[in-house]
Image (cartoon, rainbow, N blue to C red; front, top):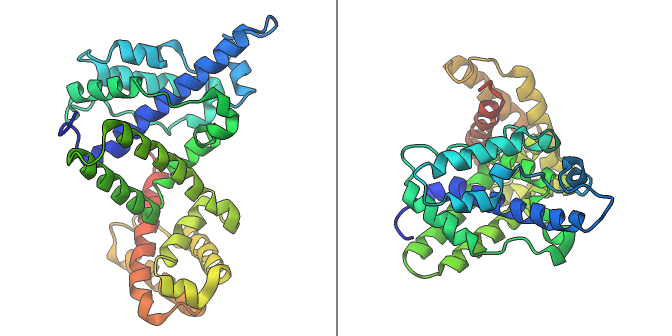
Length: 296
């Protein structure tokens, strides 16, 4: 299965399939456990919600995906599986989060089916590890990873890492199993990276701006974490107050935001020689966040 998927496609294709495979295995493990309890109902979604495990509808389970791996409709079958998972009331945290573009014409369905077959041979959930072992695919962390795509610094870092791994794979430098492990490791690292917000006392938007400001190590050394956290908080607060609906189309509105950002950075002593790059990155971050908030 080499040469079938572009590096940029792995981010959405492979990680989405890993998610489906993992939660299906976790669901089946819990289903088997509940089936052994005479007072439990393995077909009750709330039994799974109570254990922080996703309820997976029958048409979204990996067994169904695998059976249809060679179908010309495999893309739609996977999209429908994502839709079915989101539609479950007990999976409320996943609404609008999962990728649903596997049926797009540009995605090679033969290669997609081969990827499904490849993942079918890999066990991704170890029930012996308990919840700690599968922590990076809990409802809260899945939502946070999806939202993490709004963080331009993090998105760029993981995209570069992903493309490097895919390049090694296509160059026969790593095996299929090693590629899968790399993707799983990335998922774990994405969770760990998202947890930084809790450690820093920042919400997701503030963390994104903090990362933009701290991208230059010199700024972090000069100002320190506390000051950069404060700047990130002020930036989010002021941008929310001053952004207009048409800011992306009107140069005057964009100029106003640049001035606003420049003044905030100057007020808090952000190194002047680093300010131009920081302003550009902060505006890019603002545009990304606003595009996510815009009605679909």
